[in-house]
Image (tube, rainbow, N blue to C red):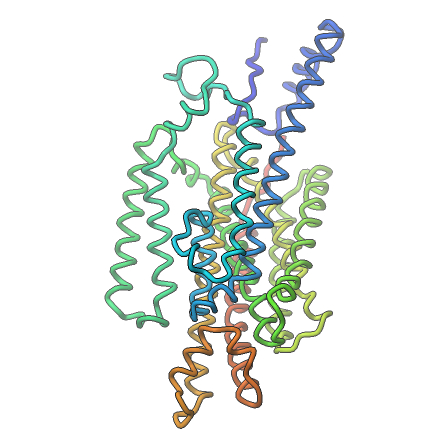
Length: 457
């Protein structure tokens, strides 16, 4: 029986045992000249190492870049007296990768962003020279011309229209979360206009995907129940995790008046837990072939994290209690690794590549939703609390409340009982964000129970 052994982005990650035996026989040293076999092995190893090096450097630089934003967002927003809108720093970062910042020339602490320039240049150069120039034609495309296709040719196959409508839909859903209850009441006509516009762009996105030759998000994927569950669980987990990563540095800056560097250092345990958990998850799945139990275990760990933060973080948190975020990072890493394996098991081999990229999309959507929602919850609770704490006879009451909401350095310079009361108000707002994260994580745990476990081979 003759097989097409060409491997491309649509090939299944785990081949059947029969196919593995056939490939082993086809490439055995006895069937080829020794020199040819050794040469191909060496070339293959070098190519794999070079590609993995680019991926590792890219992931490291990407996370280093985002860590700067997580650490300094409060101070950056305070420079503009707009702390309540600091979550939009993350939204813009996620949607546009901080490209072409129009305010870069007038931001006093713009040195924060200068790190991004060499990072992007290095990543672009490495990707251009080390990633192969040509890719094989898709076997599913009957009308495609045989042979390799250049990067430039593939560029024009991108679904720009679908990407545009998807971005518009996400943005239009973000605005009500940011504006409602803070800038304007939820009953304001603008809220309904934004939601209606999101519905329209969502419908246009679906129509664009139905007509696209190679859609950015194939709608056929959402006919598979387990894929939909995986997508929703991933979105919820990343929304909860992003909310935690957003509030933790802000919590320590407000309650303990620490610098942005020390506040950002409190995220390190969660990051370390995330890295370790993914290694453990991969080893467990490799040995047992089971992934559903890891999804349930991971989402449960994150729920425990948010419960501990909800009941124990009451301002002036000590070092040991600050480690409560470890289960959050650990659980998210385990659940994310297992969910990526789950989608490879539940979709057709030809959809594995696009399903994986769709899961990455769910992480972006989850992060944006989590950041916008937690900011909305925090600012709404704090604004109402300040209206109660700051008496009507307080000098320059409205200006004082505005500064408390918009400038973190102003908060750190306060003294006496008024500062303690304001910290208590903020802690109440943080607890609201923790409740939101707990709700998302618990919902993810419940959804994961309905997932069917399938064999990986």
